[in-house]
Figure 1 (tube, one colour):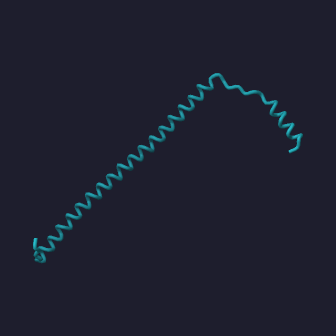
Figure 2 (cartoon, helix red, strand yellow):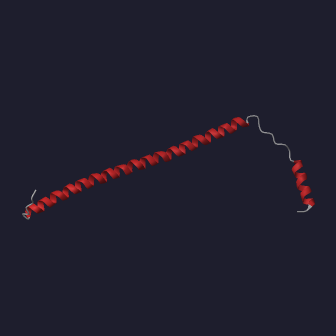
Figure 3 (cartoon, one colour):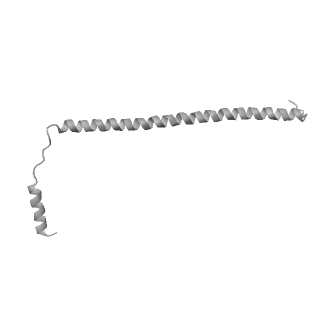
Length: 93
């Protein structure tokens, strides 16, 4: 950059008016922080609720599958006994 350009930039910077915050900027800032915290907590709690619902559904599916396996094994046992009785297979039990 040329020195003329730098001088122009420095003059523009010096001509900028001072910025003063408003009297109630702390209150406005605190209100914005509070509202962002509330919206974030609502957002997180919605996802927590969804995750809990999914966990409960998965637990239900697991319990249902375990119950179905128990009935299947019982059904197999009765089928094998029926087949053995019909074929006149004798066991030592």
